Length: 428
Image 1 (tube, one colour):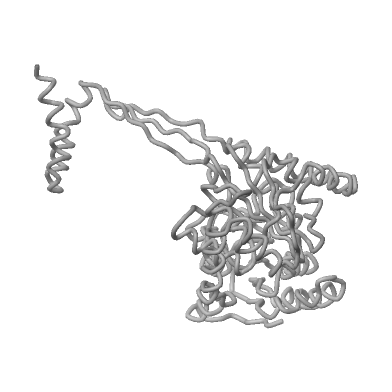
Image 2 (tube, one colour):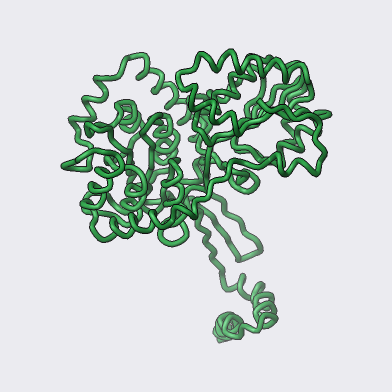
């Protein structure tokens, strides 16, 4: 594990770099699959499922019988855990409801704003080495609370044509309307363009591998809205000498096990803590089932020793992490100075795993520095805010001169005329 001591400010930008992910190099494959699905529909989705997921399917839709079977296969303790997480996520996101505003900006001029749910949303949930049934809750629960009319979910099946039972149980609990056995680029294509089985949606949510991310980027520029730019998962940890090395190491590794291209950073003011964390990482790593994958991720990760808390905060704000963990003596001081982060975890007993699963906050977050400008998924992600205005005769008399002066100033005569003809009509 690389430990970097007291780097100069001009070195910070290089230290904040993520593993390089060039999705542009994947676009040839992405375009080919997108075009095939747009042309051949279900047949293309099945064909690519056989090619990439090594499964031959007669139909894409998950049946009611498969839903019932999935529930019977899950142990009771896991079902109860999923229910608890569901309830916490629902409570937090329900509190985000926007009730609308009405403002009379001047006499006779009334402006309103209301939230309207997106009618059709598509959720993508990865399968593979880590079937993310928690992501089903993170996406479907706020979609249902927002009032989306149709919630569609695509997820890749295993080689026997089955979807992971916890994904199906979570989807049913969260209120997903229709579930389809489709993964990768072909799933994004199907939800973008629609097929005989899979409906077209207006916005697509969810994580995935580099091909899924490239597909979302491509269709997001042309055909459908998407949740946010995303890449490999990441965490930054701010810790001083009061932090527990074992806790820090566990958070470091929990992020690293996401994938070989994940990244973990520890920012600390304590050299003894840094050395103790390295020893704890080695000890805990030996016990992990995904050790080989995690070791690859550790090659992208580093520990950086800085001079004081202000430097740690400044470095973190420049990095803009997806996840930020703070374990310092004065949590309030650090918390109030955080400007850029997807989700923040405060104190020794708040592991990043809590937000990943069950505390109630959403785990679908901006990565790769996009936390400088993007929020994580929340209730607003599933609604549009529409504005209305209504002006009386008296209101237009009062506001008309202002509108005309601005329109004439921009040399847009027709804009000014739209007011003038109404003011003239009022004279009679």
